[in-house]
Length: 311
Ligand SMILES: [Fe+2]
Image 1 (cartoon, rainbow, N blue to C red):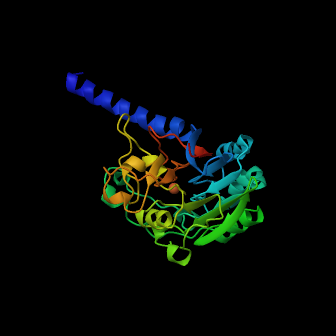
Image 2: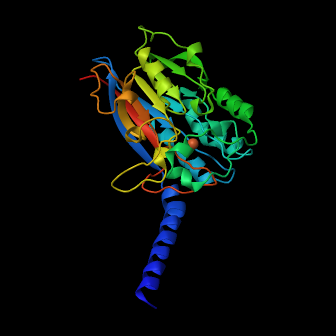
């Protein structure tokens, strides 16, 4: 065997090993990310917000469902579900089973494209070619959206699909405003826009996909925190570098975790945030499309946000 052949075989083995790790190990290595956000008025008690998103559940994924159910043990004060719950037309029962213990907590939800349309095969090159990844999903079979929504409403959660709501969270008045999925151009923030309620402790914006137009609209109206999913954290990331794509018009530097946002923040990425800039939390989520069952350097996650008073 010559050196060239040996090198080729070695690279092939590394590639197969990497795909095996991304598919079998990291894709199932769920983790709770804990973040603190100083967004409450001075002197107020902290609130614990559990953010779950992008479960992409298949009917047989009981381990993932059980992991989500166990998040109730974190004793959140509020649950926010930013959609993409389903990856199969028969996955509604396992999704509602997963959420069961969390229905004891005040909760809100918005929907993502994978609550409306069944997944389809996508070219893996999408991860390397952002201009392709931003395209809208190709048409596919419809999912039982109404069954999913009814189950979550029956569980006591509030539907924020192009809607505004007020909830009492640990005795405090919290305002929430949400949109339908911007990735499908279903967002109608114009229907629910308006200044943040000054009587509320905090106004939280909720969207599946963190498109700039939605972030700008919510933060211009005074939302102190915006919560989103959709990006999968880039899903296939480069160690030491990070995400290559966000699957929307958000910059890769904000693909997951906590950052600042203010109207126009996407126009100058080097700009310093103003003192009153809102907080943006984007979760890498818990699943993948069944046609791209890989995660690399981007573990599947749920987020426990501790909302704290400003210093
Ligand atoms: Fe997703």
